[in-house]
Length: 399
Picture 1 (cartoon, rainbow, N blue to C red):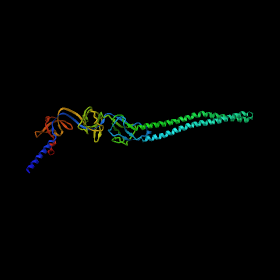
Picture 2: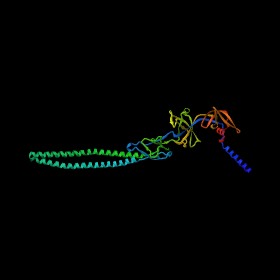
Picture 3: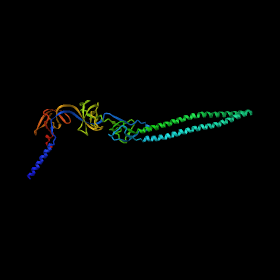
Picture 4: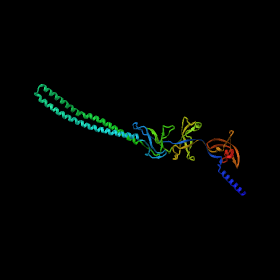
């Protein structure tokens, strides 16, 4: 029994020793100290090629809807179809104009036949009137030996026959001219319908929208919602509207914001470290290129919009990804600094707990500015001094 107790005690000591060995060791560090603050932001491309809804006249329709679209973030090549617009209103117009064109062509053919028929009819009337004219002329010649009254009647009948024949001749000469005017008007109407049909067919080809370049597809925003959301299938679009864009992902920027209390500490060209939330261990370098002149309300806080351009080109950086921006206010070379968790503040004084060969020594230090992780130390400790976290000293039960 005694042997068993000794064995269990040895196991407990080993377990406790193992647990203690896994505790994080803290020391006074020496190197580059950055005074900074961190804000979250969203990646966006510095430049992008916009894809616009084609300019379409109102007679072709105005309530167009997206019926097909490639997925957001999909890589596309120049000439690939990225969006299809519902063409039903244009297809209906094409069917209507095709029917109108058939009717117009039939009317033109009918008018051409009618023109020829009119000429033939007038020529037949001319033959009749010519025969009547010849007959009346012969009767006038025979009436030389008749009484004055009969001769006068024959002469008047001859004059009437002459007038009718001349009238028919004028109609034969003028009727084709008038009919040609009418035919030309009908042909113009036919050409107008043809032009409308041709235009509708051209607009129909615009319903399949292609990518102007290789790149990453990103849909436009729906202006009918607030806050705006990306366009999706079934959404209405209108002429001239930006419906998508192909961003240049080789040059990226971050859209972020800075609280009004910190805005005085930022300036144009200020260095910023950008980290993806998905890859926090990798830092990209950037600089401030835009600072808003006026603040805006974000939730319950007032902030200034800030744009940071990223120096590196990395295809892991994609529009819309969430990032954290560390704004570097000041950098000090060969500086001493300690983790914030190892600093104790009491009555306007600052202390650290040094671990001197197992003995804890409370030491006063002179501190400088802090960042999200560390605090600058001016005096009181040396590089490499072992430290104990304040929490482990004040609350040893949680150690």
